[in-house]
Image (cartoon, rainbow, N blue to C red):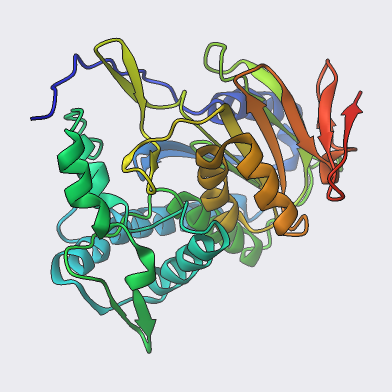
Length: 353
């Protein structure tokens, strides 16, 4: 029998959202003459803030909000009417263009991370009680019985149809917000917006530069400090900055903390030597998936994955030992008051002043 924990919920929004709120307020005052527009909403189980500048900004944001609500309805695991729920319930069937794109991106991330990112994780999420927040610690035998269902290699996607293995269920929670943020950027750009920032929880994506021509400065949450306290910042233009960490959502039982990020290799919450992993990339969808995988893999695994990718993305890792590790592509855009460890593709390490 699994143990029923004493529930401890930490109502944390990812730090980037809080930082964005402060930044947006300042920007709206400072650039009032440049037609700033902002929309806020709750979707995909998180708070979102969209800010755009320019004469078409409001119209563009209205279209972006409509798209976010559409994607939320399409991809929600909590709605029986969603396409994702239908696929899980029926074991497959025809898929929309968005779901097909997310499945393809998820399978790409699955292969790139050697299964550490897996979109069929949902049976384990249910077992631990994360979807409905009815948290519990399942017995080892329960985990062993469900674990074989988590295997994205059994998914088939062809000619607008998807097929899952028997008993499998989809969960795009580790990638959907990245995809949605990228769609918002596409919509804003199509409306002629050239300067914008969107925050979907801990998923930040930027369009162009700030209206004054300078790069956006995105704060990275200090995982050991109160919400909104920045550990460092990254300058970004036309980039996504996505952070994952166990500090964002967890429960406690018998004095032990269980984070909401599950390791598909063990069926249990990730036991990582990282406090957080931040990915910086032009591909917001992949950045979302990778930030989850890097956190699960821990410091050594994250470094190995980054080097194996040939530096196709950049990252900032915060370790339990208190170290901050930064990849060489961020050498000139990372801002911190103390020295950080600089990681190079050649395998060397240096100090970033």
